[in-house]
Image (cartoon, rainbow over all chains, first blue to last red; front, side, top):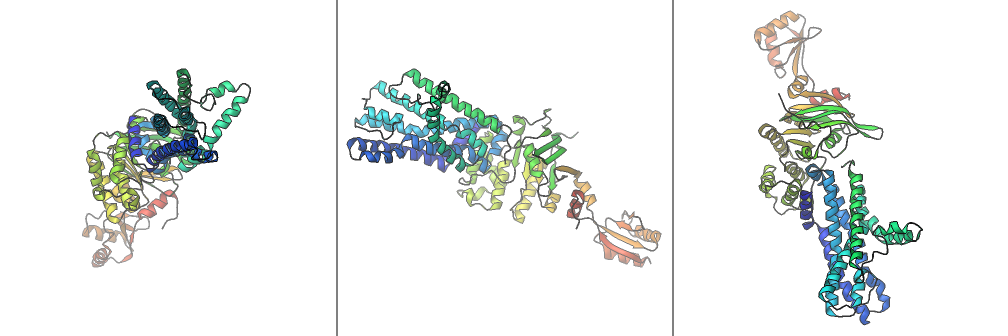
Length: 260
Length: 306
């Protein structure tokens, strides 16, 4: 599995889509922060908020996350580099490595928003959330950055990033099944918007709420600066278990599948 | 006793009702080159995929390197190199970068192997050229280098000379032979190019409709496809006497009807005619006969003979 991870990291360094996604996320996070300040300062009217939210972490990660799953999982099937991977380390290690590398890459997409939040808070400027995501709410809170606040922002950033990754982790078995980057991206993008809706609807059904709470789709898992350490840890645990389950599902789908 | 590298027993792969590979039992020995011959859809690539762990058999067993197991283990698969259908290439990378990626994937510690293999397949000078700009032949060469990156004991090559120019074909042939002769590598190679396989392989597996129709060595294949001169005369005894007196090493074979086959004189019809006339034996038939590779192949797989 280590060989596969080393190979994947090398491929990422030479892969256009992954580097472009990470750069786009960095740019979007910076722009999103500036525009939220413009909303608060009145330089942009409230009607501009819907336009600004296109740059939010939720939208950007929903768009680029599935693209990363496609590029990192499905592309080796297209290039056939999967042949050497399977000869070298077997199917279990291949799926394990892909689960780790995609989870890390998609999580990394959210991190620029955490950094932008820290910088925004450090300026002491006002910010108006264009959409109520964890990062926007932290920015709007206007807390003064003490050492413990920085730790809290970082903790919420990591939690929100892992949560977003978990929501998109359904793309993992999908990528192993479909093996077509663009199809995975399209389905994953739609899923990114439907998932929360389905989670909220399911939570309203009698008896389903406790189950939904065990998934990353529960509205209770919205990390904020008010969340306790236990709540953040709970959200991370739910997210990691869900990602692991998606990895297991991917392995079950791929275990005896034919590779072209 | 020769070492068995691969043994399949009743290996079968079904897709619904269709059997792509049907109860195939084969044995490959170390250091030999096996030519896998069959028409399109005969099951060649499926067999290669099954051996490489890219497909899972519907039934039957695959034992690699005398492991004693019925399905390939990960550590056994790590001793295989493959080029199946098309090379595993990242178009946006250079040949060297592709080599580096696959060296990492295969966990090969020696970085020098990248340059050595690129040199071996004639791609050392491609420097910064992206693989997407490579010709088909260059891609095939790189695919072969990638298949060799982990110094495999069993090399599986599916149509490796596709797209290669005549010089490239000769180079691949030399490479495959040297790998088998010098490193003791076992090679399973498929090709539509029968004359090329005839010059490369030491053994042949002929498959048709997912079934193994025939296995034979190069000597056996040569015997089957040998050209000969067929002579007949009204007096067969005199004919034989004239032949044996002129060429004591001729090894004539008398066939039903009194026809005499001369296996070493296929190209010497004029010489034979002169000798017979000089011996006052007048031939009633003098013809070069024998099966071509293609004709023999078609006779095995049940197709129309040329």
